[in-house]
Amino acid sequence: MPDAFEPTRAYARRMDAEDPLSAFRDRFLIPRRPDGSEVVYFAGNSLGLQPKTTRAYVEAELEDWAKYGVEGHFHARHPWMPYHEFLTEQTARLVGAKPVEVVVMNSLTVNLHLMMVSFYRPTPERHKIIIEGHAFPSDRYAVASQIRFHGYDPAEALIELHPRPGEATLRTEDIEAVLAREGSATALVMLGGVNYYTGQAFEMDRITRAARAQGCAVGFDLAHAAGNLALRLHEWGPDFAVWCSYKYLNAGPGSLAGCFVHERHARRFDLPRFAGWWGHDKATRFRMPDTFAPIPGAEGWQLSNPPILPLAALRASMDLFDEAGIGRLRARSERLTGFLAFLLERLGHDAVAILTPDDPRQRGCQLSIRVREGGRAVFDRLTAAGIVCDWREPDAIRAAPVPLYNTFEDVFRFAEVFADALEG
Ligand SMILES: *Cc1c(COP(=O)(O)O)cnc(C)c1O
Image 1 (spheres, rainbow, N blue to C red):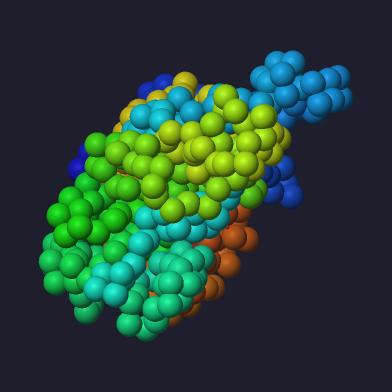
Image 2: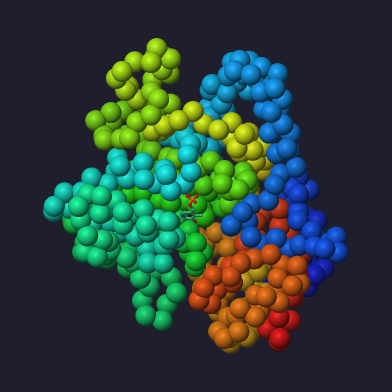
């Protein structure tokens, strides 16, 4: 693949000119530097940029609220009563699920807890949870607190997966080996789809198969995978998945999260769950019955009537994803990130190592770049030059060229400034 690229700005511009998806950049508001020039925004893995249409989608709801008051639940252009349903088909397409398997609700860590209420059912013989080492802190806290909630000790019940000595990422065969050894004592396998620190995309199909063969429940946190990878959740078959919408899904800071519950659980009304009125059968919800009767499928896990303004922002973004198509975006993403890896490797600098796997199937758009000694100074120089990426202790710069709004020329510019920054 590397020889398919050329290390020139002219080449980058030609790639941009030839790809019809390049037009999507113009649908976003790109932050600017004090001198008015656009930044190179490689932080879509933290907070995605704002689509130009978001404002109108949100304003439409403000107008309908002004005009209709409570009647907006029925008379708004997009009535609020079923509002979350307007996102169902698009969400299902995005993550490779059936509509009955997905819902947009709450925020990410809340959904993770709700899912563990139903799918972490520990017994004395089988109560362990397997997570990746260096998991996102919120996931670790959530999982450890669930273990304690059930009266077990995370020191014994939490199994963390670590790379082999000298390696930065996990090998799938090593994950399978842990499952073969610990599977019968494990209640839940809960991994990120893409690790936030290393950028490694886990082989979710293989891991799900190995975990289910051992009788474990399987869940994925797709915070860094939704809108980044071409997911096939229904086919891969985890029990649940959760994700947020403010990273690659561009729905705005703190916006609502997604939740997937596999179809095989759609009518598992016997599963313990924390209930709320929005998860209750729509036909009788407003008769205010005393007994909870869940909606079949993921919607049955909803608690509250959802906030319409962030849902409107999410609709604006999901309409763009539908227009571009996640399959086409993913193909562009592999080339953008491949170009970045190619340019960084060409620098041939021995203090620089890419932690993220080489294999495009084991990464999304993010590259985590380790700079031995002085990494923080390199990062500060990138920032001063108008590159927005991030620094993660102890020594990684995370850079995420996002296929919806980043360009090959952005990638070229990043590599050029990075090379200068290394020189000090
Ligand atoms: C971003 C992220 C979170 C954030 O959780 P919130 O509940 O949305 O604040 C959690 N887990 C992972 C893996 C993340 O990447």
